[in-house]
Image (cartoon, rainbow, N blue to C red; front, side, top):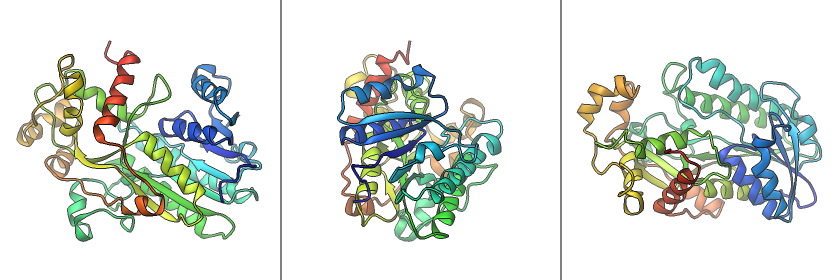
Length: 350
């Protein structure tokens, strides 16, 4: 077993949306978790993780680490058998893509994996990448072999000027594979989630996912939501995929971790039965022609993005995650309703 019970495991970016659930699962399994965070003295940021540890058979230790600081993960990694590298920015609203997205993603991955090279106890690294490293726009699905995205495909159309977040995921994952392929002691397993939804363990999550779901209920889309083709997956399923990627010796390569091929309007409709009376959720599609006219000015959507994603089906093949990691995926309605309930409780719409 790669995930040894007698050795600690490192989770980078431990306060993140996905990382929080990975930490919870590890604690529930009785592991000692080394949680790497920017500032362990910020009790407000780490309180939810401390609470998880209190009611679990595992334990947690916090370490200060900076993605852009070479060697800053050395202490946290000492003695660990597995490294879960989740830390990477997820936002589409940036002024300087190079410094806000590319540098933290690529240099952070390099810094963590170079430290892995210097830490003999590490046997496996589980990297949180993204389906964004596989495709840029929903139209890329149709041009893929068989009309579906698979792990064999790499995103070749994102750039610093167009979809820089996706570009950062491509560069970071390629850098991870470069470093992994240059050595033979530890192995790399990659998780490639689509848009991650579901409830957060942190009461004030900063993931871009919450901004997208908020838009469905705050009146922005009350006159209609675009059928923006996308894949989505529950955060609890993504965490489970990471755990299985660490536990299973046969796990290898990349894994598309996506529960549903869907669109933005369908996400809003999934909330309709429970919340439709109280929130201005979308019930009909926004015409692509209308979005083409107003999108660049109101929503900041480039027309290229509208053309290549709205009314375009997303289609990804999650067979490998099901067969190699034993994944099964929660229903879309469960993920959306659990997420929305938590957002209400957190005062998102007040």
